Every structure is written in C-alpha cells, then in structure tokens.
Length: 87
Image (spheres, rainbow, N blue to C red):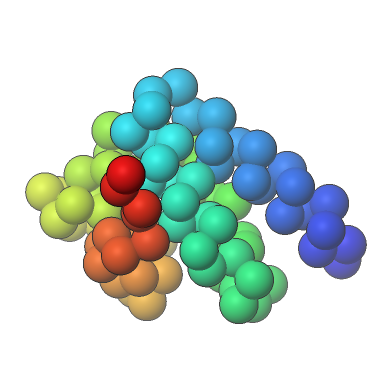
C-alpha cells in the first residue's frame, strides 16, 4: 500500500468538506494523527469520510453517540478536540 498517495487523497477529502468548521475538525484530526495510524485506522477514517459532516461533528462533540462502526479508540481521539489550533 502506497501510504503517501493514500494520505494525500485522505488529506484532500478531510480538508474539503464543505464548511469551514468541518474542515478544521476533520482536517485537523487528520493532520494531527494520521502518521501514527495503522491500516485499520486508515480504513476507519476513510469510512468516516463517507458520512455527513453534521453527523461526524455531532459524534466528535459528544452531542450524539457514534454508531458501532465509529465508536471506539479513533472516535475517542477525535472527541478530545485537542488537535484543533484556534487562532
């Protein structure tokens, strides 16, 4: 698996969500953590990117419980929100 190409594609998709808020949350999460991800984590994130921004943001902010495919350690990292630099 050529991770450089996969990371480039995922980074683009993470930072081009449609709203600035989603870009910062999802893109910021990718930028902060992607280098330590396993293949399973990459698959999880790629699957996450198929979901609606409002759902992802609700799960990350704890407003809604994430469904079983997304609940777990990766979502727990996303829920910390410590990866977003607010100027």
